[in-house]
Amino acid sequence: MNLYETRRLLDEYLLFHYGTPAEVLPWAQGPSDALSFPVRSVTELADFSLAPHTALDLGCAVGRSSFELAKHCPQVIGIDYSQSFIQAAQTLQATGSLDYERLDEGTQCTRLTARVPADCPRAQVSFETGDAMHLRADLGSFHLVHAANLLCRLTQPHLLLQRLPDLVLPGGQLLLTTPCTWLEEFTPLGNWPQGSTLDWLEQTLSAHFTLAEQKDLPFLIREHARKYQWSVALGTRWLRRA
Image 1 (cartoon, rainbow, N blue to C red):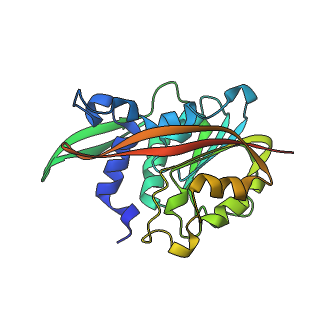
Image 2 (image 1 turned 135 degrees about the vertical axis):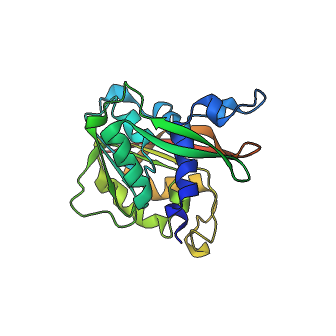
């Protein structure tokens, strides 16, 4: 079975995207600064003084970053390879909420509800399935492209990087985050960066983009009540040159 089509992973991502701090991390000594990553990957990297009108959220999963972008962009498209993630995002777009289960321990679960915040204009967002390495030809170009923790989950990440100059309008911005977790189960060794991920991005993107900001963005994924994944993503913002 495809990892990204399991009910357990869908529930895990719904919690990651929509869980409240208390629902995700009830431990006072925990790394609370790593919560709300799908929001922070937008708000801590984007420059909204550039007034982006259109936005593309690649690898949008269950959509929280897409809804955050809609606060600033009248038109947002979220794309993900997982059908179950997109179905969940479409339900959230249509109704504003979706029930799911949080794994606590063993077979014990807690029923929770994912809710799109009221200040996120859901009508401005649409979701569709798609492959980030082979996006549809008529997708168009955008003032802002956001791709959070996607690159090191692609078999051929260079195919996305090659498409990015066409996806971002001149003067637009590209927001990339990655934990730089290169694994052969996702990406063949021959397609890994030769050297650091940041150097690789600069070498690949520099012909069309200028690196405007670099930032470390911690994030926390809960597996169950006593087990978490704490990681630090490399966050970058790039400006598309004319």
